[in-house]
Each structure stands twice: as structure tokens, then as C-alpha cells.
Image (cartoon, rainbow, N blue to C red):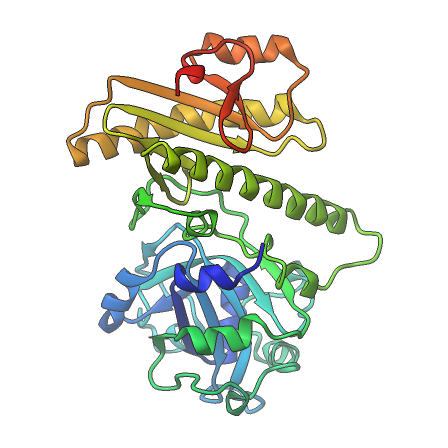
Amino acid sequence: MDFTPLLETKGFFRFTGPPEHWLYAVKYMTWGLEEKHKAHWQRIQPGDIFFIHSTRHSYFSNAKSGIIGLGVIGSDFNIKKDFRWLRELKEGHNIWPLLVPFSEMYLFSELPPIQSWDAPNLTNETKTKTLVDALLKNYIPLSNIIGFPQMGSVSGVSKAVASQILFDKRPLYAHESELEDLLATAKPTKLTKVDNVAETFRYAATLRSFNNIEPRLVKEAASVYTKDNELLAKADRVHSSIIQRLIEIFKAKGYYTLSYRFVDLFAHNGKRSLLFEVKSTENRNFRSQARKGVIQLLEYDYFEIRKFEEEQNLSFKNKSRILVPSRLPEDEKYVGFINELNIGVALANEKRINAVGADLGISSI
């Protein structure tokens, strides 16, 4: 998928700090803001993109000022009371209590394997200095990015500035969070009206599915992970095309179409509602994908859709939960099992959706 449409939907931020603090961020996939920046902290949402500015104001003489990478905001926002970054450890003060979680970081330089080094602390300054050199090896001087904001430790970033970095061609070294997505966070997102598939990626916690990011990722030759990433990218493209199809179908029928970080698509016309979970089954993994989809439909319906109905004072007379695979499933028995749970299975064609197995009212849409 082309990233260009997302420039209209994503939030873009710049975080500034010394390289030793960014080493901690890579190690633990989190950043911290001062209490005075709470307004910024509240604006930042899961799926927003941040740019990493490493400053020369540091405990280490080899620090340089420049852009060293970018990343995606995760969902587990929190407030800490302990000391984590090197300056906090040295001063014994909780300077940056407002935690910003990262789901992905893409650095311009390669670091040693995460397991081989510790975050900067009071006893490993020699090792940290070596890591700072590695972190800054391929940095972009600020003078190379026209209009990059430099004042303060956090700020918004314009689309013009974001584009210069997002569409750069330099290689990227990826780091990912191992934390699972959370429905309940300190800053939950809400169902939002969407008119196209690009808008459904507003809260997506990954950049891997975008065709200007994935080719830049440094990959190990003949790696299992390389193969997995290629399969994931293909699955994301299939997933996106199905959601776009569903949006077009239901907008044409006068439905509101909504989405957010967890919910693939929710459509309603005030009387009838449909909750969709789309699954790529390109490698014929229908049962395992369907099992996940069933749990997601039940969970999202119970938590998110119920909350939406209460907030909007809506009561739908007809509600459907529908699993949408990318291929016609051959496992008829498992389709029957899903239908027994009062969940429909359907394929999305160009102009309509067609039931697979029991109809459950799908043909009347």
C-alpha cells in the first residue's frame, strides 16, 4: 500500500533526547515525557508516527545532533514512578513520568543484538559509549531535512517534513515490541468514521505493509524471518483490499462505516449493524485464522460495540458478526461450527457480500 494517503490521517511527532536515552528506548520500546508536556502526551495516539532526534547534549562526548530513525506509537500508555533513563539514575529524580509506548522502531544504523547489551546505567558507561557510536553511524544531519523542528523535547511535525523522512531511500533496521495489543489502555481510542481503507490504518501499529517502507528493511539472507515478513506484507495487502471493498459496498447502501485500531470495520444504518473481522487465508490457513477471528468478533462486540451503542444512544434491531476470509474456505465443518456461534462467514465480491455456509441474514443486506 502506498503511504501517501496516510499523510492525511496519521499524527506525526518529533521526540528529542540524548543518544543514551534512545538506547534505553530501543531496549524497552518506550519513551518518556516531562509532566509539563502532558498536553502533547494526551494528543499522541496509537498508530501515530514519530521521528527520532538524538541530541549532542549528552553525558557522552561522541554524541551528535541528527535524526537516527522513526517509529510507530503503541497502545500501552502509562505513567511511571521509578527511575529509568541515565539522567534519572544519576539525579535520583523521576524526570520523565509520562510514558509513550512504541510498537516499532526503524533505525538508520545497526545495533548489536538487543540481548547482548544492557540499557545505559551507572556502571556501563564504556560499553554505552561504543553503542552510541553504532547508533549514530548513519544519522541524518538536521540541515538535510528542511523545516525539521528543533525547539523543545517534543513537538508535532508537518506533513512536508514527515514526507522527507518517510520517502527517504536509506536502509532501515527494525525493532519491534513484544507486548500484545491492549483493549484497555490509559488512552483508549474510539470507533471513527472511515471513507476508505487508508483511514482504517489511522491506529495501525505497523508500517510494514506500506510499499515505501518494506523494501528498505535490512534482511538477513535466506532468513526464516525474511520469509515471514514477506508473507505478512502480502497478507496485509490482501486484508486492505477486502476492507476497501467492504467500505465501498456499505457506503453505497447508505451505511456509516467506522473503524479503529482493533475493529477492522463496523457498518450501521441506525437500525442494522454489522461487525466485520477480515482474515487473509492466502496460504490456506483458514482454521487457525478463523479461530482468532471468532474470538476477536466476540470480544470486540462485547466491549467496543456495546460501548459505542451506549455512547451514541443506539439500539440496533438486527446485529451481525461476520468473518470475511480472503479465499473460499474448504473446511465446511469449521464453517458450520462458526455459524453455530451465530457468526456469519462471507466473501466480499466487488458489489456485494455472499454468505458461506448458513445465510444468517447476509443475503438480505
